[in-house]
Length: 205
Ligand code: GLN
Image (cartoon, rainbow, N blue to C red; front, side):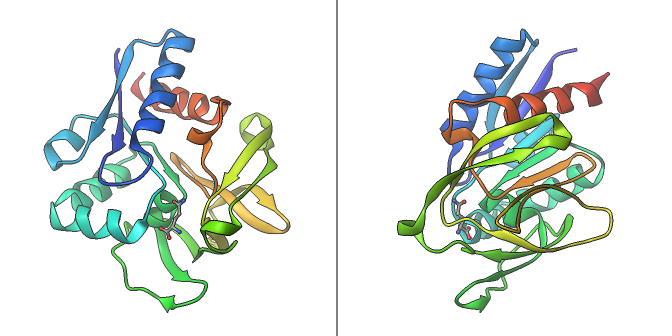
C-alpha cells in the first residue's frame, strides 16, 4: 500500500522536510510520496504529517483562518502520525508561553499534554548545535540543531520523554505524536525522518 506523507506548507522549513522525506522514501525503497499540504482538502489525503519549524504564531493564525487547524486536529486525534518540529511541537502542545513575553494566546492544536517554554534557549543569535540522544526509538546519537527552540517544562503522565539536553526536555512522544525542539531536517542524518516514515507505514498495514 502506497504511503502519502504531508508537510504542512503554511510557513517554515517546508522544502527541507520535503527533501528529507523524499530521501528516506528512496533510501528505504518505500512505495509512497511526500506532498506539501495547506488546504483542508489536501490534508484529508495524507497518512502522516510533518509540521515544520518556523514561527508558530504565523502557522497557527494562518491555519486557523484557512480552516486547516480543525481538520488537522481531527485527523491527529483519530491516530494519524505527526512529527512536530520546533514551532511544530509548539503547535501540538496544550500550553505554550514565551520565555520573555509570557502568554501569547496563539492558536494551538492542544493535542499533546505538554507545557512549553517558547524561545527557551534564547533568540536567533543564541542558536546552537549539540549532540543529543533518543535511545528509546533507536537513535543513540543525533546532531540537534536548535534555533529559537522551545523546551518542554512539563509533561502529562502518558507522555514519553525521548531526549533531554542539560536537564531540559527537548523531544517527546505520545503514541503516534512526536515533538522535537531541534531541527532534524537541517542535518544530513535522516534517522528521525526514517523512524517517522516507518511509523506512518506501519499504521497503514
Ligand atoms: N521560536 C519559534 C516559535 O516560537 C520556533 C522556532 C523554530 O521553529 N525554529 O514559533
